[in-house]
Figure 1: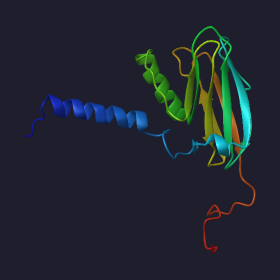
Figure 2: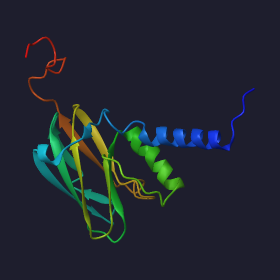
Figure 3: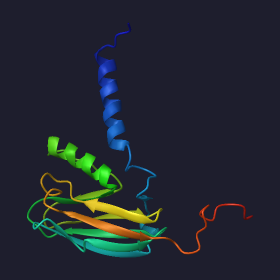
Length: 167
């Protein structure tokens, strides 16, 4: 039987933690991908408050659209906006409950101190529903959630237009 030294065990734990953190929700996934400010077709302002609500809590976009979310924290405690699938958000929230002081910065999220403003630029690559939530301990359970409705881009074929046509 092969044994691993301390360095091997630590490396394995770091890799496992990295896989959890970089798993679904990071990079290309059903909710979309990081966008570039220069490609944003519009800006949506979202307010976060200590009554554990986002305003607006429902937003409509089109598939392929890049949106710049300007997220303001009007409350007295830290809030965040995290885009993801319901499963990703619940998994991330469980981790936040275990490690409340955990700091993280990914393209699909922004943490905002009281009275401050942050932003997320996101390109919605698939039609359907994309959830967002505040994953600070207690906030998700209190109902601090929202939804982005992504309308199917008109004129998109099953191959998303990247098929047999010539350039």
